[in-house]
Image (cartoon, rainbow, N blue to C red; front, side, top):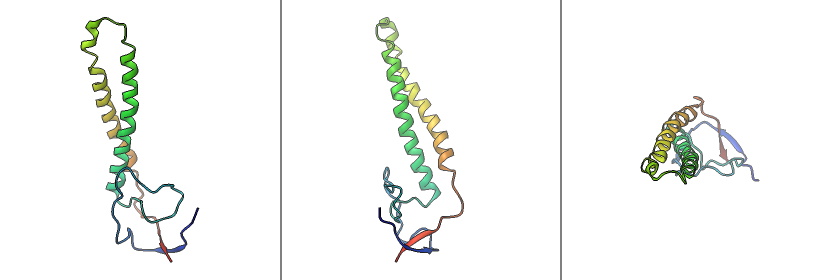
Length: 119
């Protein structure tokens, strides 16, 4: 693993900064490079919110699938309402992800961390 040697720079964020496209960030996180980082609170919030939506949607879809599988062998009259199970689970996942993603995404330190500049 290569480490960037440099001095602390006061310009924050870098002058040529552009927000990295979703879903990519700096990987592996141990590398000390200047590319792939999020500098603005709105970028951090949006990135966290989108990933929270994705993860919550997958978990709730899995739970909805199990709920539908449990209905196999039941009377056919019940099946006309079963389309509501994934719908309700997705609405709940969206509400939960909105709250959780917003809380986690807005936990931000107001002072910017020092930035390394390459020699």
